[in-house]
Length: 113
Image (tube, rainbow, N blue to C red):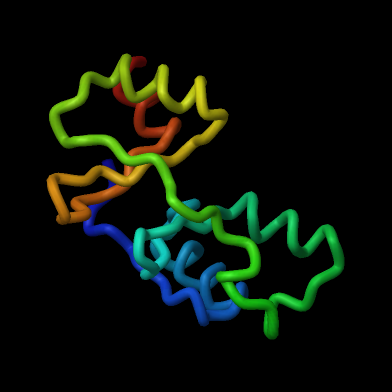
């Protein structure tokens, strides 16, 4: 999993979110909402393809709300199955109320190969 967990405000622009992803070399950010949400590079690309201005559009306009999470001790095969079943590529790793990091399909592929 990627740590530390990178968090962005729901009020941030898509340009700001893209800059964090680029600088940290990651493809997803947790959004500080209750419950937490997620914004991915795919969300940003889809928005751009639809002609939206990334300098004015906010993360809250494209984020996925109420995301699935996984506990830190879950087996990789179970995480991979969740990603497949839900059609997603990123899962925040959560221990109780503490968000520890993010696991991606790339992390799983790297670990299993």
